[in-house]
Image 1 (spheres, rainbow, N blue to C red):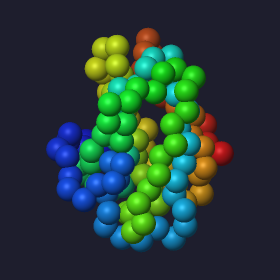
Image 2 (tube, rainbow, N blue to C red):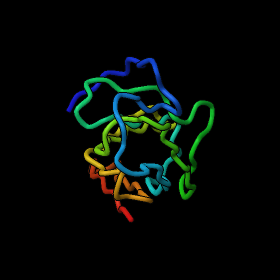
Image 3 (cartoon, rainbow, N blue to C red):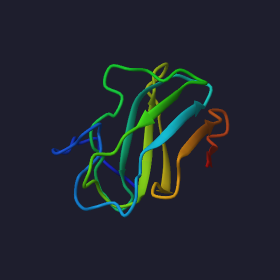
Length: 121
């Protein structure tokens, strides 16, 4: 799935507002990629664009956790996550998280193989 980096209006902490969540979709994201994350995007799985960067000026260092808060009236439960690493500006995408059922996501990544993994709770 290809999404552009075009910022969309109507974002609160980088999340698009187009419908109502059936449940609370807030979650904790733990960085276990081995690299600091400079940018974090969360977007509905069917969207063609990414919203704004959730982190702003913050960086999530390896091993750190960041709490993602969705505004009331945010989009569907199914969301994708894209990160941009601080050290080399490379991007990685994880797709199809049901955030109405997930409280915690731990992202892992192997730069040498390109393999991504997400553990959810």
